[in-house]
Length: 228
Image: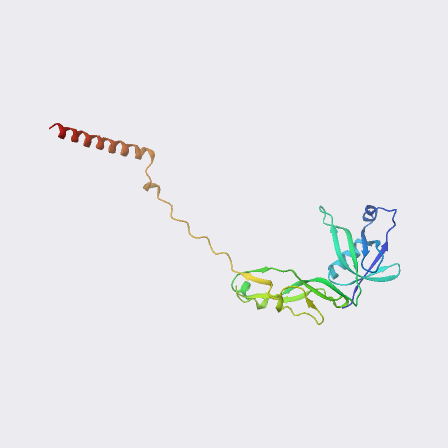
């Protein structure tokens, strides 16, 4: 896979990072085993295009003062309000040495569990941790969800076909994506008691008085029987 080339410049130590941002550039740092740390800056638009194409799993060729340096986009800081790039970390890599990377998934196809059974796909993993030579890194793993035919179906790590030379750094039985059934309709609520069946306070008062009167009469009759 052809690497992506990104032209960068070395930063002037006397110039603040904010000044570069005001000029439409993103401050960056390049570091790694066997190389000297370098403070860089890259045009905002150039980096945006490179980041979209490379992500964090594709080698980028940094052109620094006429020489190329192989690197991965290791970390990107964003402005918390504007969500714009404010700083980049480039990690040096040796193309012929192994690196650990998380390769994102790219989901394609249509799941019968969604199309026919009205389920919802649930993604448990958005990428796969692997180890391979830096030169063999790929941008993403393609995952076809058409094999998820019902709510017992699942695509697991073991189902992902790895390129030659890749070492899996995750458990094979870990679930990548599955489908869940649609929510069951709410149980029908118990029928409300008809208003006519519930005595109002006005209705209840005469009934209570009548019962009290009847109780009193019975008590009086018993007393008369004892006197007799």
